[in-house]
Every structure is written in structure tokens, then in C-alpha cells.
Image (tube, rainbow, N blue to C red; front, side, top):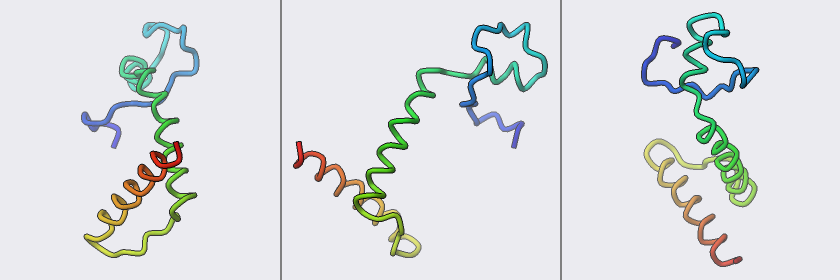
Amino acid sequence: MIGDENVISMIPTRNIVDTIGRIRGRYGKRMKRQFDESSYHQRNKTETIFSVIKRGFGSEIESYNSAREKELLCRVLACNCHIINSS
């Protein structure tokens, strides 16, 4: 929902050098004000970790209901152990 106040915009504006006064529209200005470049570039690291886990330990979850979260946590733990042992 666009009006949700708990959401942080992670969309970079097209032209970084534009000031807020040059941007038209309420949502464009909000997007420009809320954008944090340091947080935006952390996404690449997260996507890489997800890719490593999926390639090494499978992309499908075998469990149902409450065991799903435990299975995911076990995969993350196994991935961390694998990274530590291969170093």
C-alpha cells in the first residue's frame, strides 16, 4: 500500500543530482527524501548469500508449517559452517 508509513523506499531516483524542488509529485519527493544509498547497496550482499544457499543446499523447502522456519535456519547454519571450513 502506498500510504503505509512503515515502509522505507529503496528506489533510487533517476537523476541523483536533482534537488527535491526539481522533482514533481508527492511520492517522487518522498522517495528522494527517504532513499539511503548505503542501505541500498547492502541488497547485493543479501542476494549473493541467498544464491549461495540455494545453489549449495537446494532451492525447495521440504517441510510444512512450523518446520519450514527450522529447515531454513538449518540451511543457513550449514552454509555458515561450510564457509568457515572452506576458508
